[in-house]
Length: 378
Ligand SMILES: [Zn+2]
Ligand SMILES: [Zn+2]
Image (cartoon, rainbow, N blue to C red):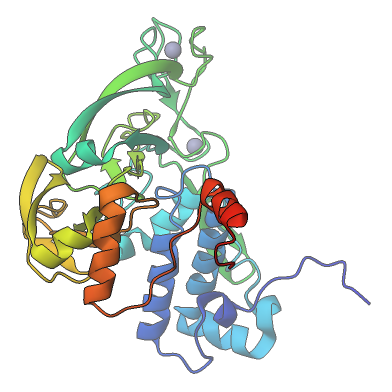
């Protein structure tokens, strides 16, 4: 019989650790999952947020000796209320923010103490070509984002009035709830964690303190950026509320495929056609590079598929560690059709090389002539 109860995954399974895992192992497993699924890194991705919360819940229990012991004996029932108590992501930061160090937003938390909530992070993408990726470039981006309301100055209160201290939580933004043995700190439901309430709302922003606007930002793409990389613009996300800091803006960079160059890390690859005679006798050919053209020597006796490496003609390293190489792949070009003197010379060459070649194809006219003169038949 399928259960109608919502299933809750085993905490050890959630963190991917053994039941015998040490505190250090549990902490490191949690950190990995939390950093990967962090809401700041995955704005708008509800699944990531769900995984983040699930892992945080598991960590809250397994990192606490008492709770873990109860969980080991009684399962989820043993820690009810003590674990599933995260109202939102902000609560998780209140509890474990210091675990993330300076990884997110510098503050290690989404909500600054004493009210104020950090604005959401935004995500957008830009497409550039390979030359722009090589040299770096700037782009103007127009993004809709929440800006502090100019009418109320961002506090959400009708001009002439001020937000007042929340009497439910006394201005701390947090309330402590007790359930049996368990004490749990949660966000104040009256003020939403800001510690203040607005009696008379600003009309323009309906008390939210923020207004959605289209803003234009200049994004600088550093040289060497590769397809799929993400730029983080700190403090360019949505405005915070109640004096909280702005979120970040994440820009996914796509680099268009180039018709001549294939990229592999910092190295580039291109193909140049070389004729049989050039390969045998040697030649100087023009090769395209990112900066224009370069003359390259094909040595006598060059083999098909050989690679000529032009050092330092690849992409700059995005971390500033020099430039990659351009690998020029020699493609032996075979003419589709030859005729006249060209064909005669090749047939002579075949004789010298003692190789069999296809007989000369007789034309219709030659065949007809042979027919009437009784010439040899094929
Ligand atoms: Zn306003
Ligand atoms: Zn409150």
